Length: 293
Image (tube, rainbow, N blue to C red):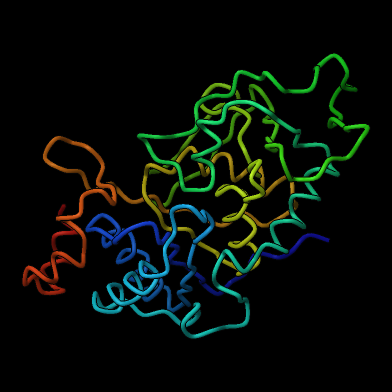
């Protein structure tokens, strides 16, 4: 029996502690907070600290402090608890492993031993500058060995250690959704994006799988994030379907860019919320700069 669609709004903030939050994050998180307030719903804070090589505890403290200073509050999170915890991804491995096993048993993922460069990106959220390239299919199971319209079944079930796991996309299928800000979106699997990684060979679940599992487990009804993640949304819709989970609504914010038109990243230290605070900016000025930037 499929789950019924929740009627109570649940939004989320999902920063990654790989650096200081900047004014682009301020825009996204302020919009997410205001949409939750307008809907008279709940806002959930999730610490997306999946990547052990890039995430640092001091950035967890900084992002919580900076968002509180900005005037954003949440009712569930790693600092205040809640019914769907833990709210730190590094503590949620059991949920991800269960989902991985389900995908493996359904025959929609396969082991992959190539493309280490894009594997290195898979634990963090992609964006328009480092999005995972379309996979050429080097390790993809032979299509001729498949029964028509049936998933691939590996004769020897594998474990998610020492090998990358890729989700096999349905080539040529249109993935359509209506973004609440940007309107109708249409992408073609196998052209706009290819088979993507859901688990890394170093035994770390990838961003795409983790956020789907967490948003479903935490009953998120609307995902607010940057427009650089539109392709990720198409990938994640396929994962929601494969796992039999409810698909939330999506609101992709316009990106804040620098003078050269480049999307702001955490390397733009001068535009971090922390640096702006230290420079004497008020929270009202940071909010205005984020919304108008």
